[in-house]
Image (cartoon, rainbow, N blue to C red; front, side, top):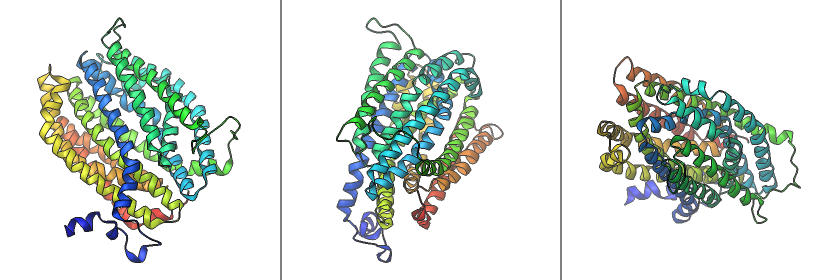
Length: 468
């Protein structure tokens, strides 16, 4: 009991000499974290589960259809990378302004983000449509999947602008601790997507059979539903982030500088992530359609586990940023440590479940292809080793982003994901000949390196001095 108390009690998370004021009780502190984290976890896990259902529906068409949808993932993330970077900056600034009680500045930051979404989003929509075939070839789409992939990519990018505006509104709501809005928006939209997939992939209840295009149309319509709900959340007169056409909708240099400074770090992070993931995906795709299908199945479970950590990370990001805004770095440190402990508990449970249910899970996606299911089950065993590393490093990264320490997070991603992951993936797949197993072992080293670097930075306390 004494060991557990020292691990989980707030009494031991901040040294007495570093306390600026009163430290909340363990009950109160965990309640604050879970109040924000639980809606975020429910949202992200629900979305991930419904994405799995989508993938199961597509897998019933053929492995080629499932691979076509999966292979568009990294090119699509490449297109979205600049908007992810922008949202990292907006999260840090809005959380800090919330903590300082400067909600007018928080709303101004949101308006700047939406304007940038429109300007940049229109340009990227055009580029994504024009260069879809080249991007799919770069992602190593095979002759039996490239037509599916190009069509899917083009259709889903037609709604890029409303999609990125929805993302920005939701991250702004999370930054002020209002994770319930994002929960309602994204889960409702995902339900719409699943229903439309049921109708359009195989052509039910009189609807046409569209297969892969059906998934694309379903997700595009769902993106429009999400945008409508997100917009309503900030037009409501009781919203803390309420915007109006009467507001000042012009760029202001000081705010642009703050956003630009943090976005630069976030952009380097995203470029490192997307480059590393993209090259890594190419290495895996070169193993063939069946190997990539097994990879996608195991990745479904990895994405699901990621959502638990991402939900906890969203709460940690908000609380770290808000308490820095209140000039309470001691509480920011405490909430970062609480987030890490919650992540470790969740990871332990998820790893156990992966080991116990890996075969039934894989068979849900590939019951007609036992070789693919068997390969995927083997990968899930490796995933069980990855999860403790992944969940804790995601929460540590969230803590640093909440403080605005985006440059260090970017450096971490550049080294671990941009360099280590693709190189080790290539080394273990090609020269060493370890195949798909080798590619997944490379992920263990990537996640471990990220965890060591991020925890080292967090312990140093340098992130507390970052200005936004």
